Amino acid sequence: NEDDELAWVKLANGDEDIMLVTRNGQAIMFEQEQVRSMGRPAAGVRGIRLGPGDEVVHMDLVRPESAMLVITDRGYGKRTMLSKYRKQLRGGRGTMTSKITKKTGRIVAARVLDGADDELILMSASGMVTRIPAKTVRLAGRATSGVIVMRLKPDDRVVSVATVSAADEPEV
Image 1 (cartoon, rainbow, N blue to C red):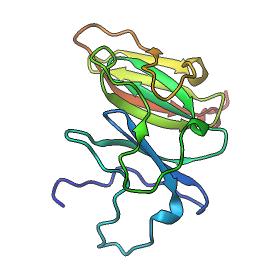
Image 2: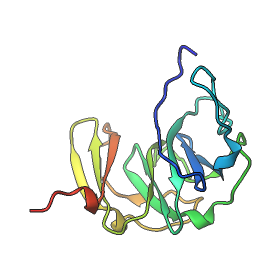
Image 3: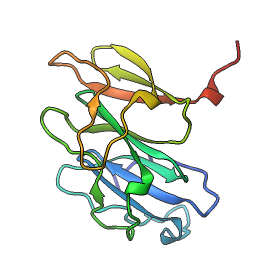
């Protein structure tokens, strides 16, 4: 459709689960087998049923012993072990992955993290950049808001988050 866009492509081996996270704090994890193979012109299948004004902010493959990281536009973040999420059928509303309030803002980024050495680079709308080790972001339950990972001025917002793996870093 005119407003649709392809945002993520992941190479999968067939036995991973799929995780979708929305801006309003919902997440759904379902088995890859629930997405059938289709040709290029096909529209695809519904992964998650969105509420009014909501949109998917990230898709990732679930790997054992991984954690879901979420960052909100007001600089809050948290990690939640993926074992805290239950598998659902594709196309449902999902479950809460983060408590969204005026104080925290909406989710701007989500990532499945496996490595203990991953680092996060956060950028704000005003151009402020922060680089932090991902393991310093607190582990918390699904229905919590998280902690401040980037201090912002009242009129600023987090607009981008990048993950840097130790494997991606060039040797010096």
